[in-house]
Length: 246
Image 1 (cartoon, helix red, strand yellow):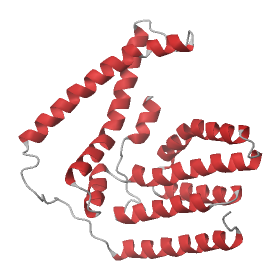
Image 2: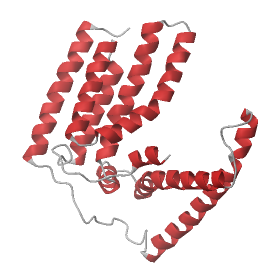
Image 3: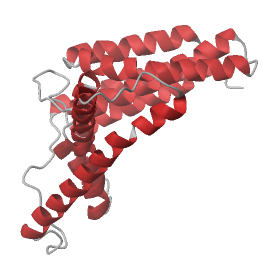
Image 4: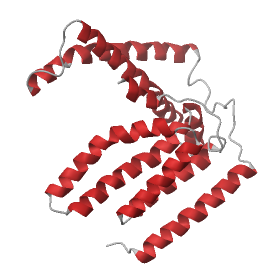
């Protein structure tokens, strides 16, 4: 659990990709996402995932994105099994599972390299309501916190003799109750503290609050935007003309 939750904690690094405006990073991730949906062969997805991993290496986040992909491998195996059982064939089952991993990789590139503050600025720039932005960003911030709490509670319960790996499926489900109860209690207490902090800072008193930092695109951002759009368009046209849908 500690290994997995570490992949959700944002760590600021200095790299050419992290220097980009967060809107440009979102554009690049969206391009990878669309190309993942358009890919029609396994080799196309392999090349696409290779490009995503190359960008992850440039962003110095390859290990963290690898955690997300490794965790998604369980769901990829499930997708493979369902499609294979339904009789779609081995190649199609592998294609759908690989496409799922490519989609996870493309979205991880953005979320791993973007801080919650930058995510908040992007959502405000898109025109989302302030309350929606606050709720989403708060959820993103507390995901690793809740995962760490769950890991600590599991370790504490194991030290008291609670076993999670033994017994029937029903017994294992019952053994999760001593974990879920304190986890929910901690979350409720933390939400109350957050509400008090918001109230002490007069949240909602200003109709249109300003931000301390503003997003400003430079020539570096515009160059990366034009280059990524050109490459994504060329790849999309190649797939469309050589591998028509349907």
